[in-house]
Image (cartoon, rainbow, N blue to C red; front, side, top):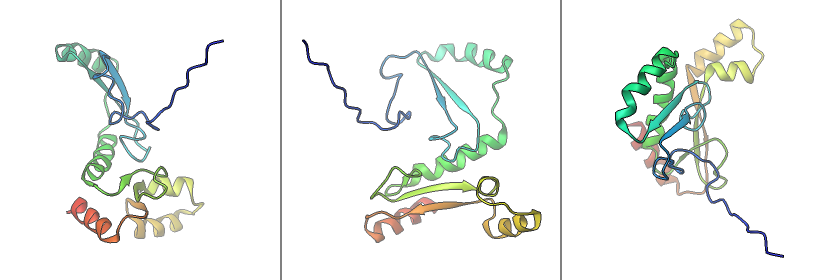
Amino acid sequence: MKPVPTFRWTLPIATPVSTQPIALGADYVVHSLTKYICGHGDALGGAIVVRDHQRLPELRRVLVHQGAALHPFAAWLIAIARQLAERLRVFAYAVSLGKTKSLLFYIPTDDILRTSFQLDPPGAASYRSVDGDGLFRVSLGLEHPEDLIRDLDQALA
């Protein structure tokens, strides 16, 4: 009897950063912008990437006629998280994958009020007066504190 081959996965999440299907030969790739690209899961969106850029006008026409238009607020939510994540060098932009690595994650106030608290309207207004539009959840790992401070300084500058 032949031994059964074993496979070892080295990438825990198949994001466009870690898995690049176009480079592996795919002609079209559909990415969800809802979780790992958006970073906070409260904006519904997606992206289609094509190998042959000459197909873009045809694809754009089909998507427009099918109603595939991203809402402006969802686009804004996706771009705030992306900009911060691109600037961080020491922190990982993630919820709970880091273990000993420092993590940072944006949580919109509407999500907190909807999922975490049972507040009446005055209580929700009071919470929002402190929290504003949202907050960042920060989990400190084992990196040197000065490296973490420098990373936040340069990302927020």
